[in-house]
Length: 367
Image (cartoon, rainbow, N blue to C red; front, side, top):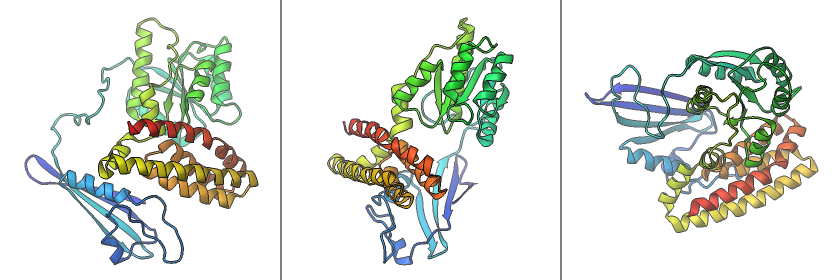
């Protein structure tokens, strides 16, 4: 998939933004292009069921773009690919040294003294991105490629903050944190934050019990990282050697990890509360049915069936904003494609717990 953007002046106080999203998929026929923005429309092969989801995505896009007085169109060639075009006319940003902050929760922009940060991360790309974020904020960065090396580096140098990946070879982040806390190393009392894509409430409790001060969710957002940096700097100013352990705020955990409330609100506004509740019930029934099939496929070690079932449910999860379950299903599908049976089966075993938490969050969203 390719995303292109372009802007041009549209008056003294406005700018026209053009967005093009292109893929190289199966394409869409000319007659189908006229109806794909309608609600509950999915385009299937004439011979087999290939589309997943409920067909609401493009309908929601159309409404959002229209509400912004914009236009969305589609051009496609069967068997070659499809390009969607969105054109919006927006107010010109204020002409300042830096762009005006986007609407949303206020963030702490006060400058803080540079911190010495140890990044313990086995993925070189993740480590590089995290380093770039920290350097941009003016901090000093050191690296360790796994938990074992992290313990060794932390023993020889005092760090103001340690960002610890949880899933690593040789020694995972939880064990590394326990080793650092039990040692006489120079960073024994430094705040350690878990960096992870998986942080259900019971997992967060495990992080805190190991001696971590909190966690940062992947993919890491600059504002979330900045919040941790300010917390650490504030604690140092108040004379606290180790940041006080705390879990992410409950609302953050629900919004960021389990469901996308904005997506659900869009669907509810589109359908009305009664139809929305009915669709949620249908989704819950489908999820529980497919999860039983996934469990059976995993028990049989049938990777093709597991991949197919995970892909099917992931489509519906995307429509209903079940982001955590969607992410785990996509990971299972990827492991199946890579023929990594052990990882795929391990991930499948954790789906019921994620679904149960997601189901509770979805029920709360009805109120």
